[in-house]
Length: 229
Image 1 (cartoon, rainbow, N blue to C red):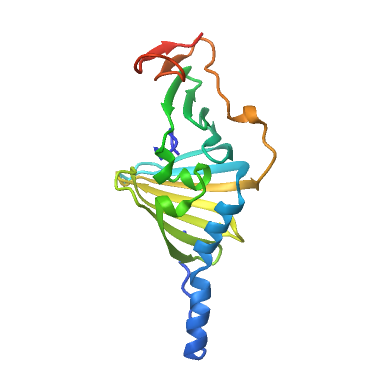
Image 2: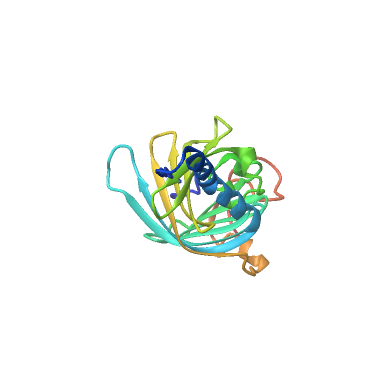
């Protein structure tokens, strides 16, 4: 998630033991990252916390840094808020995605539909069946995190690859590379699983005077731009 929600994990252990022990131990370790991810997705129906984000362009220009907070309740409900370097709010209410830019006082409205199924956001906000949208493989360990490589099953998902870092069964980091060579790194500095979240956390009303781009839920006619009242 840069100014959009995205739009947008090496474990190699060798031991000088008997061959049978090496093979048995290697198999157990190799399953660790994917097993942790599946367990996390299965057990964590909701969460809230804070994140830091870095976007690195293929051109080599200066990385863009951002930070903020988030909350989600599956499926499809989330509140993702950038606080630095500028504020931007993304809210999913289960059927509609609202993106608000306070500086412009502009709200973009989109239908979520099945869009989460094959995007990195599905890890957090999707239905919970991660294997439907991704092919998972072990990414090894760097001594701190166990990594999982997740490749989208859909060829038009908009991103090329995804690495997910876990520690002790808890989601810690995500690295996403899109089809334009841009890499987004998200580090979850705080993640509280299954908190009590107020239902209105995932509701959004366009602020007075805001320009609304897209079709408001329940509105007739095609998409367009209309001021909020």
